[in-house]
Length: 452
Image (tube, rainbow, N blue to C red; front, side, top):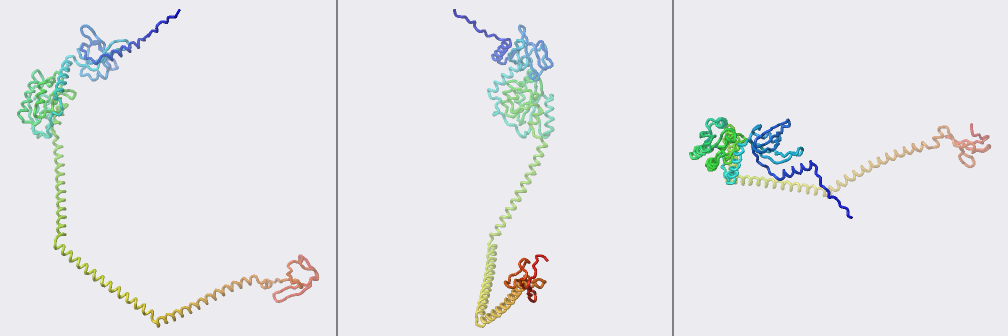
């Protein structure tokens, strides 16, 4: 009977299960906007914040990490109604379903922010933010118009900057509301009035900082379209550097602050004066250089004219004629000198070839040769005498007579004449000859000894 094998079971660990659930949750949902009330808010020493977001029927745990928390524009607390942008996740260690918060704002601002984003997107699609339709700001405006509240800090900042940078520039203040229900309509009318009058060639729309509600008048669609229709270039400087309004995007240029708008609208008068002085100096130098070039050119033309003048040409020809005449005279004199020298050489050669002269030369040569022969003979005789004296001294040194003169004698056999040099060469009774310096002795050997 065949054996039945039990099917293999896939057993998951809790860690694997929570990990898979987390992956499914994070991969299935995009970033979501969720509105609710904060409760059980806790911020440990790590700087992260943990809280519950609830409504009347449910709640969910949320985590706001420190890097995102530092970007908040307010300090959240229990009971606050907020709008968060978050992604869905799972805390695997406890299996808790939670939201990871990327952005948080008060719930009221959330509606305004959504309206802002919708209007911004719509106007952008219509081309109101297109850089190609925006006008260039005048480099040196004749008059600047400021559209703002006459009592706000923004207008004081702008006037202070304009006074410091360009005090001679005229400024017209167009007073208007910058906050409230009727602010957008009044700002629009004021801008259209300033544009229609044409007193200014640059406008600055500005106010100080505030919340999104405080700045909402500058996010009005009618105001945005009025700004886009202006013929006068306009700078928008609404709020602080982090604040952005629809007016900023539609205006020809955005300044982060009112003070920055004043600097953007004007040139620095001191720098302009310094630049003008520099340009004036460069212009003077350029004029001096050009005048100097013209003077040099005029002098060059005058010089060429003097060279090409008929009188100058005649003078040159006269000078050339004098020069050629002098050269011809020198050439003729040199030629005459050479001919005279040649004639002198021929006369001298002819004088040498006469018979009397030839005879005189031969006599002189004979006398010279005779003297040379005598001198050579004397020199040869002197050298021979010296050689003879040297040979005589050498012969004297090896002469037997010289040896005999020192007391020696030469002994020979009387019969054979052989020289006897040893005692063993003689025998008793043998007759020998002893040659002396002045004679010869004949004797008979009585006894021969090898040593005396």
